[in-house]
Amino acid sequence: MKEQLEHLIAHLDKTQWWPLAKLVYAQEKELANVVKHHAVHTKHFQQRLQEQNLTAVDVSTLTGLTQLKPVTKRDIQTAGDTFNSAVVPPSHLPVSISQSSGSTGQPVTVKRTMISELFWGALAVRDHQWYNRDYKGKLTAIRVLPEYKQVEQWGPPVSLLYGSGVAQAIPVNTDIKQQVKLLKEFQPNIIIVHAGALAAIVEEWARDGYSLTNLEHIKNVGDTVRQPLRDRVYEITGLSIEDNYSSSEVGCMAIQCPSSGLYHIMSESLIVEILDQHGQACKEGEIGRVVVTDLYNAASSIIRYDLGDHAEVGGACTCGRHLPTIKRVLGRDRNLLTRPDGTRFWPPGGRKTLEKYNVTQWQVIQYAVDDLEYRIVRDEPLTKEQHMQLTVEVNSMLKFSGTVRLVEMTKIPLSKSGKYEESICLIKETQ
Figure 1 (cartoon, rainbow, N blue to C red):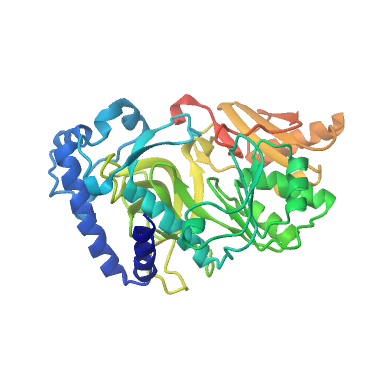
Figure 2: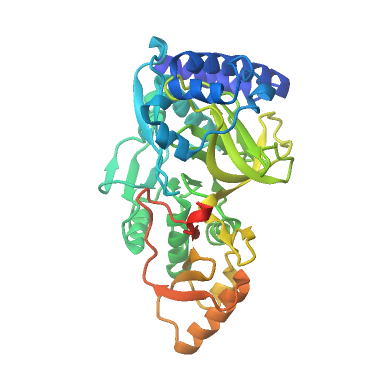
């Protein structure tokens, strides 16, 4: 495993500089292989092709692939084990099970292979390399964990390949004040954390002082990073959030470029499309749905899989890499709110409005077109007058008229996967 991982890391160090035409050629070679495999061994994929009068050859190029209707989370749930291949090549074994967090209300279970794990490790190293993180440094991970602990190394793949410094693991559901205390005592060089948890931590720093003198990197994992949070973190710490875009079903899809802030798509292992409402490829600057094809998964037929995410197409990057780019990842379908006229939108954070009231965290939940709940967290309750005034301002900010209820909370609960969503639309027709 170590030798294979080292070989793949060295290969990826070269491919990131390949011209786009060479990347496309390599993608189509692997696409033809994975399509042929699933056309022979995977019942659900066979049915997809038959129902659309397509053959494996028809969808074995990037252009031909666009003929195939995307598969949704619901499709995968309904397909059950028929979504998985009856045969997995020996060189791809062993197979493991991966389940999505279910933050959309639709958890998906797929199989991943040893090749998938190799790419996971190699791309994790690529992420570290792009940001020049020191493997001998002290690392803190704030994740969904059963208990707090300190260990002598980071864990694979870094420890396996290079050795590493010590690490601290903090359960994400730990009280925020306690998290900040543990961070101060440990003094990490690197923090890996969900953006939602970071949002609460940074406000604690703003109130009680920022004292992590050795911190050099703040890496988001598994969450959508909004610009107001980036601005707030930089304001308090002087550091930029380092991000990537991933999912449990396909692993790392894109890494944010340290030079430009664009997200480079990991084209060596995936085909990532961003499609408009008509299923056509979006142009630079346009926002659409993210559809992904895993070029190496011989266990589950993840071919044109609609993740339910929305992203904006990026342009050429100044760093010199020819890997295509995403400008920003906006979130899931259920993060879009719906106005009475039927239009859908990403709700503004309203930081300037909320700062006036010392609000440290917020979340808006939409139960119906005329039923929204705006949750806020602050150290002390609002006065009656403040509550009335902020309610008016929130309705105005979201462009609703008296339908948004303001609810004060001591803490906004995280999802089971430890994530925090600023907005959630629960209108069934939009899920």
